[in-house]
Image (cartoon, rainbow, N blue to C red; front, top):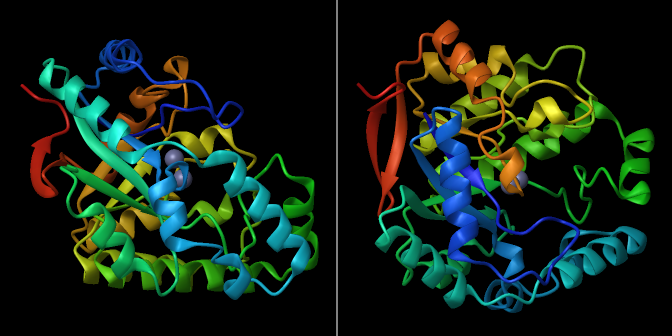
Length: 292
Ligand SMILES: [Zn+2]
Ligand SMILES: [Zn+2]
């Protein structure tokens, strides 16, 4: 098993400096859950190099000034770390023999993915996750933010799923990332269309057409939706389309690392998935779910 989605910072403390011990602890906790390889995948918007590059993107992608203000304060609060120091720490963890891959969770910036890819290209990343966390400037999954969550009451659910899927299709087509993170994150708050078939089909097609892998994540079990990402009908579509899969917890602290990996393993078994996608230098290798 893999845990290919791990953060080093929590969302309530942007200042803690990172240590090799923390990564060693993550590996130890992962091993307790039968996970033998992890990837550190911090959010790209933690790093000044990235936030300086993409600028105040919400000023062109979001029409609502209140939402612009919310995302501005979110990004300003979270950013400020140094990309070089982060990569060096991950490299040091790898060099020390820990079973760690160097990764990043990359957000979709409409029209700016070539520049983002250029920024990341010189670094020795093993795997890049692609994520949709906002539609325009609306952070639909920032559950702690009342103003963002209030949008769920005034927006049409089908339209939200459609906008999310369109962004995901655009992200996949850029080829900038290797794995679709939490592929149906738009369900996070439990708002699900009566018939999501169209969007499941399109998400699976986007993954297949791009050659990206997709993530099976336990994080959804900890959210209002109370379901892993992806929903089982979407997982079946990925399998039918031959999309490679990774497994992930999306933990932000040691106690959550590889959370419910045992349950993810049961899901893989039920879906007939016997291999997972491991990455090194952004090249994929299929590895057995359970190494012999
Ligand atoms: Zn995410
Ligand atoms: Zn994440």
